[in-house]
Image: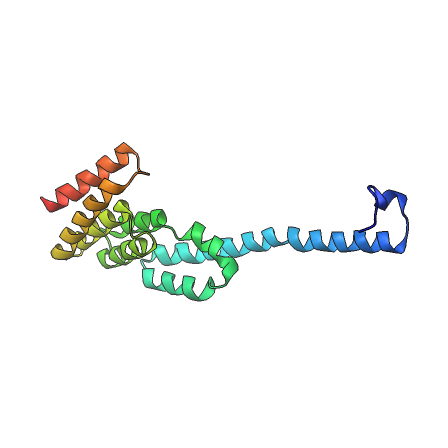
Amino acid sequence: PLGRHGFDAYDDNEQSRDVIAATVAFLKSRLSRPSEFAAKRARAAGELQALFAEGKIEAAREFVRTALSTPGDKAITAVLVSEARLTSEGNSLRVSNPTAAVAAYEWAVELSPLSPNAHSGLAAGYEAAGQKDQAIAEAKKALDLLEKAADLSENWKKMIREAATALLE
């Protein structure tokens, strides 16, 4: 605390060396963290991608609950598991595995309950799975939420509106 500007160059003593050593140790501990974070994110991304590709949505949820459960993992899950990612996974599974698609859409709705896109996707998933009443309810929910959605482009709103309206017809 009593050091002057440039102490490391002017004051060649034990206290200066201790301060420099502590600073270097601090920087090394902080600068090594991003590479650990990136490695964990890469492993998690690979595991989730494999589970999604196999239509194992519930297994992916369990993986997130167990393997990505520490407070520092929230940044990883926010990148790897989002409403947009889950609706995309649902879209890719809807024809080949409607049950898995519904699980993906339900997870998307859980993450973003006010998203007209997530509810529209869930409506399509329910329709593909033969669950007509649930599909109608979700399409109506998507249309209701669409009226309040200020963060969507007009083109995106139009696509959601057309999909939900077509399902209701």
